[in-house]
Length: 159
Image (cartoon, rainbow, N blue to C red):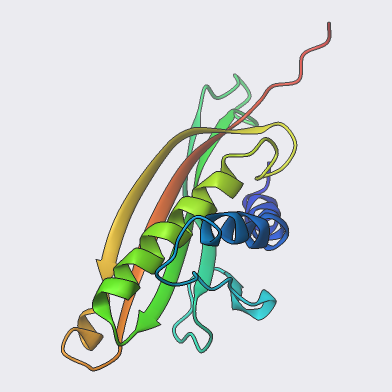
């Protein structure tokens, strides 16, 4: 399981599945519609500047390698994949509601079977909300919701 393939699969899953999830969510709300990220607003890795809102960054920054073989050539890889949902808005209440709703949809997509590739399962998920401190006092505030997925590779055993 190569880390870059996990990120590529997650981005492909989000591009394919997020529009329908957001449309279904928007059908249940009356205050405003959550926007769907444009195809160009999905990023591999962490970006220093984002120009399209909302945006989704996906990266695999950490992993654990355990149960090493005697030859030290292979083991059980348990990577962390992060998906950061970013939004910018002048209305802080709408900003947080958008992040909450969009993050819910992202989790729905990434918890589907094979969202990170065939044979890859999600073991745990953690989430954190972050406000960009540089925009705290600005008219237009930027904030993000971080998803951290601990993954595992299902071992294929002959029957």
